[in-house]
Image (cartoon, rainbow, N blue to C red):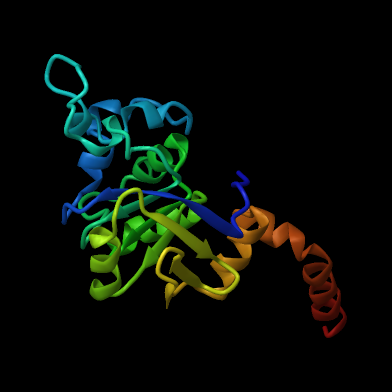
Length: 197
């Protein structure tokens, strides 16, 4: 399934400084009753967003004036816990194109990359600068340059992403799309391989 293309994301940041946000907090297990990727965004961070009566918690960031934006900034060790891909689905369905943290769980990182959500891993120092910035905080993420910037201060930092996943995200490819985009090369190789025998 193709994903949305990501080149530059410039947006207000939604700040969620809590550490060790696990996948069950991102999307609680009771909402995993479908294999469709749509509709998960409405239950993103459900137990943090709503009280037991289903009413919005006024102090949770998504329910405040600073809860709008396509970049989520979270504390250390975001996406730990289970391997559920639904966590990435929920973030994407809610409208987040990138998550910024100083550390991501490996399985979450891969699930995010495979579902059109860019995990931007920064240093603790850069993350601290974002959290200490005056709200609203605007960020610019340039996937081509592999660089994140706080435009208000001009501070920038590089972030890691493999060249393969960079190309996939910039073109909106999943793994199958990527193979199909190189079909001519695959066919040439197969013809060469057959003729060699």
